[in-house]
Structure formats: C-alpha cells, structure tokens
Length: 301
Length: 249
Image (cartoon, rainbow over all chains, first blue to last red; front, side):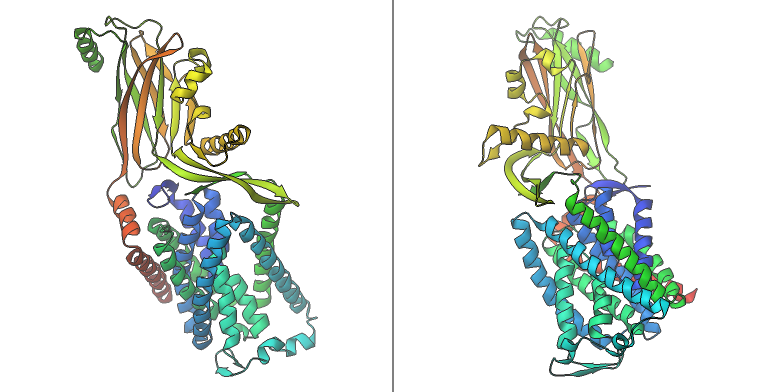
C-alpha cells in the first residue's frame, strides 16, 4: 500500500509504518516509555528525513500515551499532582533544549552529541535496571537499598508537599528538576523521555512502582504536545499523514501493552526493558566508532 | 508516429541554416498526489540538418534539472576514534534533481571542456561553492555529494539512454523517484556533432503537489500553530478513541 507523505516528500509502504507504530505502541503500554527512542531511528533508517522523523514521532507518542494514561488512570496508576509538577519542569526544559539544539546544530555536532547522549544515558540506565531486576529475581536484593526510599539529595530539598498517589512527602523541586532534565533531553534527542523518566522516578524520587508507568505517560503526553507545537512553529516538519499511520498501529498496540503490563511480573518487565535499552545503547556506541554509512550530510541553508 | 510526421512536415517547410532541434516532453505537469510513487518522463523530439534532411551523425544529450537550493555539506572524520563532523563547504546552487542521458558515452561525444560548460554529467554540475575554493577539496566534496544523491536516486547518468531512430527521432526515458522536490524542472536537449554543440533547446516540466497533499503542505507552512494543534488533536482523539473501544471489548 503506497502512501505519499506530503511533508516528508516521499512515498512509503503504509503497512510498514503501521507495523512500526504497533511495535512502539506495545512498548509504551508495557513499560510506560513513549517508544520515540525506537520510532525515530527506525523511521530515519526507512529513509524519512531526520527532522520529519523526530517531529512526527513526538506527535505519535502523544497519541500512544493518551490511551496509556486512560488505561492506567482507571486503575489509579497516575499521580496527577506529581505528573503536573514534572510537566511544568518539562516545558521549561524543552525551551532550554531547543536553544542547546540550535547551538550544537550551528557548530555541526548535533548528531555526535545525540549519539553520545544515547550511549551514556541508555547505557547507564540499562545497566542500573538490569542489575536491580536481576537481584530482585534471585531474591538477593540488599536490604539497605530497599529501605532507602529516595535519593538523600531529594530529602535535603526544602518546602515539602504530600504526593498521595506516589506515597511520598518530598519537595516539589525534586520532580520539577527531573522534569527540566527530561525536557532538555526530549528536545535534544527527539524522544518522549520515558526511558529516563521511569528510572528517575524509581531510583531518584523513590515513587511507588504502581504509579510510575502511568505518571510517566502522563508527563510524556504533555511534553510531547508542547514539542509538537514547537516543531509546527519552527521546523514545520510534522507530517500529519505519517503521524496518522503511526497512530493506527500504536494506539492499538498500547492497549495490548497495558493489558500485558498488568499480568506480567514487574521485575521481568524491567529486565526486558533493560535489555532493549542496552541493545540500543550498544548499537549507538558502535555508530560512534564504526565508519558511518554517510560521510557527507546535507544541511539546507 | 503522427507526431513525428507533423514535426517532419513542419520542419521541411522551414529552410534554416543551423541544425534544427524540436524537443518535447511527455508530461509538462507532474502531479504529486496521494499514491504518487514517482513517474517516468519521456523526452523526445526530432533533429534535422540545416537542409531539413535527416541529420547524419548527430549525437543527442538530454539534461533534466530540478530546482536548485543552497546547502551546507558537512564531512565526517575520525577524531580520537569517534566519527565527528569536521570540515564543511557551502554550495549555493545544488540542483535537487539532475539526470543526464546521451546517445553515446559523453567522453566519445565531446571533450572535457565542452562537457564542463554544458554540464554533461554529474561530475560537471555547477554547484557554485562559496568561500573555500581549493580545487582538490572541492572535488572531494563534489564526489561525496554526487555519491549521496545518486544513492537517493536523485542524480543519474545514462550514457546510452538516448535512442536515435533513423537519424531523426530521438527519445530518452528519465524516471523521477517519489522523493523529488517540487518546482520547475528544465529539460535541455543538445545536438552535438564533431565535438561541438550545434543546437540546443529547452522545455519545462512543472512538478507540483495537488489536492490534499498541497493543502497539507500549504497549511503546515502558513498556519503552523493551527497545524500543530490539529496534529495534537488527531493524536489525542485517536488515542482516546482506541482507549474507549478497547474498554468495551
């Protein structure tokens, strides 16, 4: 089924794009990550211009997270208060990220920066998650780490709020700062940031595990809305036809994903996510050192 | 065939001194709409000698060029083991599409100087580099760009792409892939004999988006905020709709 994409300026096989959307949809429902870290590289690999791929993927993540947020909110899996604080930080972060993006682009190193960020972040987060879930599976998780709810730095921040959904009494500055950091990365890496957000919520904020996925999706929902609007105003690279195709796959995939998430053991889920994250980090690491497919790249002036 | 007879009749009536070249393109208006997967253009016409007879020994070269754009071309280099963008060059006129077809290999038709003047080949495209003009470096960047564009199907050379029938009628087929840039394309036809270009003619092909595709592009370019809001609404509605649908199942 040939479909012509008016903004990307080329024709694609529509069924492949729907399948790609379904794959990321399952991931987003299952793990609470947007799946953008998978969609964007795969779209580029398919031949879609990088800017269009990143912009359209972020719009698609909006749709995938809506159904995820609905599914999770039904079983009280969203801490709206915590989520809203993070969204506030995330929007500020997206603004900072846009400035950084322009700076790295002007010196011509944006792709190296993006690659290096992927390697460092995905690599360290993947290792952390893999170690933790393996320990839990073997039943050898050390007691001390389990008792420490959140990072000592978080406890030292002033002006505490109660977050009932997460079961926390901490300063709102902590989630806001996490939001800023994720917002910067969202804009720089063209991803929803879920794969950073979920571990940050678990290991830095110490939120209870049953609200992590839903709250992460809630945050991603609003940050990707902001990103879509920002792209529509600046790069004009959102391809609505591409978005629609991706969505057909991902909204259905997300439903299956969130149903699976209820049945599966969280430790196993975390281990699988860790494996996917590590695999992508490794691929990106190779990309830095291996001779790239394209030595030359074209930037319109 | 009727075309050809009409052409011949018209040409026979005109007593001209130079060789006569009458080019035509199968499609002057390429419409890019839903389902567009590229198209094939047939560039054809007739070539006659000044006396209006079939031109003996003419070679035909056809050059089809898409709209030009200024670009910055960056080159990656290994730096401490990591591949980073190192050097770059600015090129002010890079055709978005470039295809050459000729009746014989260019090297056998004209010398290099003539080929360079008329841009007979991807190696001779006038890219108008600005700033750095070290010829060795420019050559390297040019080769890199041409290689990249060739693999995207946007630059091509076909050294036997023009067929000449009875020394009068010629035709060449050039395919446009689906990723072509829209705009005005110019098709230039050259008649060459004894290493000299003796006649040339130009015709134009308009590649444009029509229907929904045009509306979407126009809307996104001129009403960014609204377009973004619409994209968000589409996403939210589809996500929400799927949620409702699955909740009932």
